[in-house]
Structure formats: structure tokens, C-alpha cells
Image (tube, rainbow, N blue to C red; front, side, top):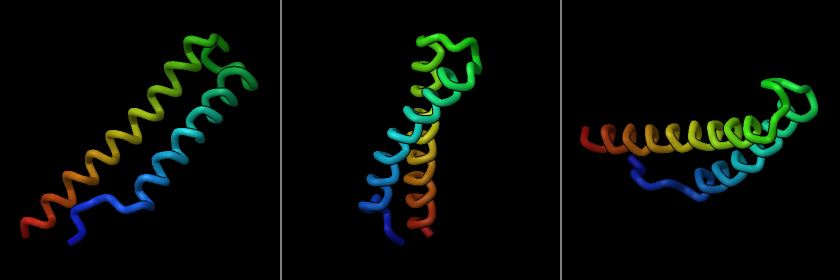
Length: 69
């Protein structure tokens, strides 16, 4: 089993950072969700990026567990 991240994983994460900036801008500024404040937009962006980081860590852990067997 491949234990290392591929270029696709890194590029997907980079693309997700851009998508999270766009999503937070769209939801907070354009649609007025969560009050439309700048601090809320930053928190949503950080939450989206950290959520994807948790996914990447889980993937790394899962690949490590599978490689043991």
C-alpha cells in the first residue's frame, strides 16, 4: 500500500484552500449568513481549512494502519 501522499493530495489541499476562501466569502458577504462580519468569515475559512487538514491526517493514519496488515 502507498504510505506517502501523492501530488494529487497536495494539489487537492491547495485547491481546497482556495475553495474555502471563496466559500466563506460567498456565504458570509454575499448571502449574509452568520451576520456578515469579517471575523466570522475568517473563522469559517479557518474551520474549512482545518477540517480538510483533519481529513488528511486521518487518511495518513488509515494508510499507516492498512500498511501494517
